[in-house]
Amino acid sequence: MKKCKICDCNTTVISDSKIDKIYYKCLECDYIFMDEKFYLKAEDEKKHYDNHDNNLESLGYVKIFENLIEEFVTPNAKDIKTVLDFGCGEGEVLPILLERVGFSCDVFDLFYFPKKVYKDKKYDLIVSTEVIEHLANPLGTIKELLSHLNKNGYLLLMTYFHPSNDEKFLNWFYIKDMTHIGFFTLKTFEYLASEFKLEIVKHNSKNIIMFKKLL
Image (cartoon, rainbow, N blue to C red):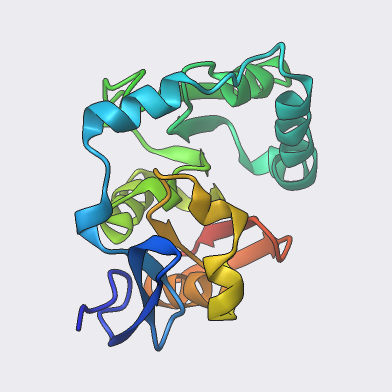
């Protein structure tokens, strides 16, 4: 049996004959991850992202980020001067919106902006939207992001929290995206907060959570 990629505890298998995939669910922190043999090749993953139409002309997409800024970023604006959007996507929608309201924002994306501009920097806010569900090594990435976050800085993540019921999980819309390979709940994030001395500042119980780095 595979060990959890977040807390290294035991997992149980989730599978269904109707779905040609196998998942593992952590018995401790609730993290669920897909078996590696079902991962896409990098070039196929890139083709999938190329089909996304996420730009400033996509009004619904823009509204999602405007709400994110209003609900999670603006209330903490006095503490934030520098921002990194980790996994910004080809359209850079969130960075553009952040800069419009006065925040300086660096960008990184594995496929579209691969230069690690954050390498020798630290930030007051790191935002990563619809990214961590794509990661084969989410724990390693979270550690890396926290190393580039100032003390009392904020880490803002967006990813849908998975259903606790296995049957509902297997019918969940979010796993239908072939590039989504890892799934979290509030319990998973509470484990991460405890492990890395983070405070959970706010979450919406659905798909957004904000941490504050205490040390």
